[in-house]
Length: 558
Ligand code: HEM
Image (cartoon, rainbow, N blue to C red; front, side, top):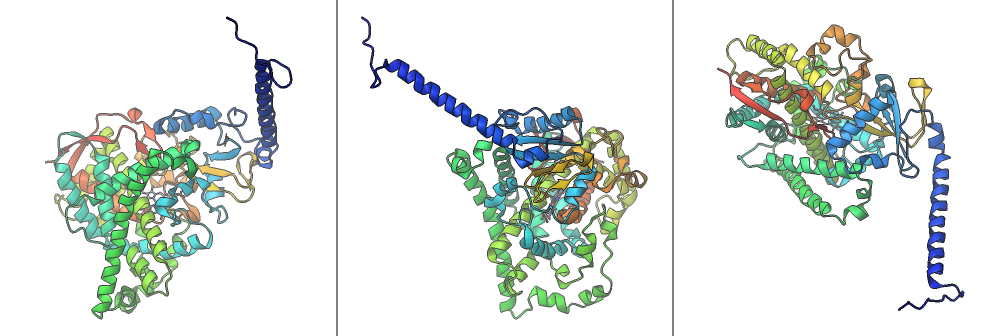
């Protein structure tokens, strides 16, 4: 039986009317999208950046589709492959209408990082806010400037030297734990993370680890998972707006992870505040007053401790940070923060103290854990390099491989230092830095212009592998850091700690701590790796890691 034909108000059959409506709707959408694409193409930033090399973009989405369905390691591979495809020192991509310019060369990196103008982080860092607040890593303008001035000197050479016994104690603690893994294949990153969290707590934060609890491990795992979430939101653009993200199960996981992270940092702050109040109740001076009175301080005022011996790499801010001889130099990080909060006319609010503690705990641990894990894997692969490191240590310690490592010993570790610098070249823990430029910037390369409002990504990982500056960029060769080879390179060709006014405040802390930890491990164990560098699946989820983990095997040295 045939169906009766429905007649619309206009007298046409209903199906024809329905077809016309869909057609009009589709035409409308197409016209709107075409107009939008036309508008995009005529935007000032698109026109100004038109000569910067790029790959083909799709209308409307730009290059955003390329990350769809890719894992963190897949995205990292995509980014490095793109740089090879484009074969230029600068490249651009579009996420929708958003322009992103990537820099692969030292000269243009200097234009951005060396400037005191392009200091604002890109909007991508805002995803860290629920975790780090507006701490030093993210903040901008006057707040960043004044906090940087307060915090940088709390990592001064004099303070770092006072941390050496704790670096030794924590190295011994980790050596005991590593003994349990002897002969097994295991992921050393978990151990390196826990060790760095515990060491940071006992040094920069100045709190004693009173029991063998799992705080360091739990915190490190929570940070690792938080990095995964933030990275996922960076690459999956639909997860960026809180409105959508809050609908996902991931947002509930984030709440739990942040609870673990903030519980640790709040406990640390509370303990330090309690110490502060107890001192005052006992009639003792505040640390600040004590420091001011100390004869040691008065002596050093005349001639600050020479920190040049731990200037592993030149730094534009060394002059500013270290000539700023002031009383705060004598207070370690959290001691200073509490004083600034309690006695110095409220220089810092409770919220600001918490933001900075969270920032230092994150920046200070995950970076160092990655650096030490890559170092151990590389020694396991390059056994000739490992032998040389061990020979150097034997010479320094003259048969007493168990004694504590002193500051002077670290100065003699010339070869180990070169191996560490080479590790940071090939596998920089922070593989890229993203800034937002607030004015047009002319680059050295081909006079390209980066329009204001653009996100600029300085890619340390690729600059460190640019053939212009490195003879065999993909070959692990500690001799790249022989003094005669360093002199030939532009300064910005090697920037694992960034450079310029926003460079890493913890670079000297990191190098000193890493030397003691890694020398301690090599003195005790021979490291074996069953994989090769070609097997590394790198993923750049905030901090550079290996997707498969950092598997090594240890055998105890006789
Ligand atoms: C191997 C270890 C480390 C590496 C490779 C490293 C690398 C970096 C890099 C590349 C930046 C610039 C980031 C950016 O602009 O997005 C940075 C900033 C920073 N780092 Fe490190 N870092 C390390 C260890 C540390 C340690 C141990 C601390 C503290 C104890 C620390 C504290 C900071 C802080 C607070 C900033 C922000 C500085 C500012 O914006 O003014 N880092 N680090």
